[in-house]
Image 1 (cartoon, rainbow over the protein chains, first blue to last red):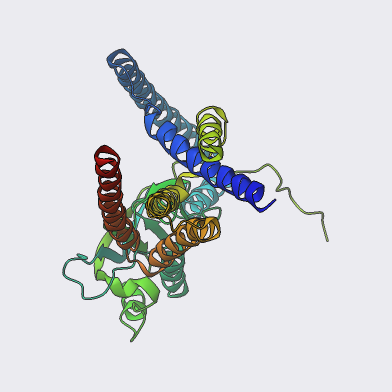
Image 2: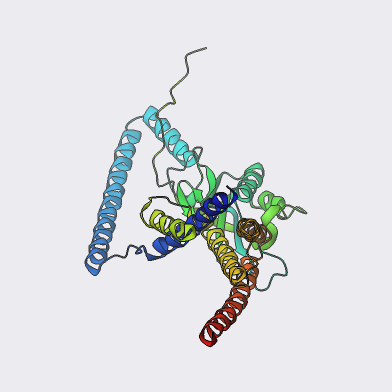
Length: 239
Length: 115
């Protein structure tokens, strides 16, 4: 009986060993999918095609926007009501981020420390630190904020993704391992005051970044280049 | 004999069964495999020197694999490549065991030749 049990135990142990070895062998032998020259060329052609399509669409968008502006100017020049409406429309566009804006403000540059020069492991920024900085700037009266030229709007969100290998801003990727530039338009002195407040820039991983900021007479922030979502929002009933 | 049958079935299962172990555990699997191989060489040596005990073998097989995987896991958590320690230790042991096996096998062969 004991002998039979021994045999079964040995068989099971060797079965496991055989399985592990064969599995490892199979996994290492599986070819890694490599693109052929033709496939690479086809992909490159597709990229070029899409790039030119994009440029055409951007140009068309620019033309249509100019036409729209011309129509608006025309309507505004007809009567006073039209002029007021146009002024309100322009103000709404500025606030929503639908037009390029400029004005006095600050430019904040965050550069990660060189890990070789640091005496402790370098931590990289996450969405948390960016949210903190944006909140500081907004609280200090920033009227428009952009991160790496991505304008933050009422529908913008920040989220770390893929184990913080990048942070999504307006669904576009920025890397916490590269330089990040935050621009804010607002009262320059107030914004600078908020940033130079003791401990304001020591939050979490910000300590591992070389942070420089300066007040500028004319900060330029490009417009929000995506479309707003309006699938669920509708006007509330009259009170 | 039972060991050979088990090994053959295991190899067939490993080659043809469509089981995927996540990439994340690849290092653990390799270290466990190395520990298991060390136990097998140890068992072979014990068999030749007539000190083999299946209970010692089975417990060593699973125990060594477990300790190796646990050390690797701990190393991962501490940011220390502890799997290198397992590779080194088991590698050296396999070579030592193989040297003893070779010597024992040669002795037996010489004895048989003499008689």
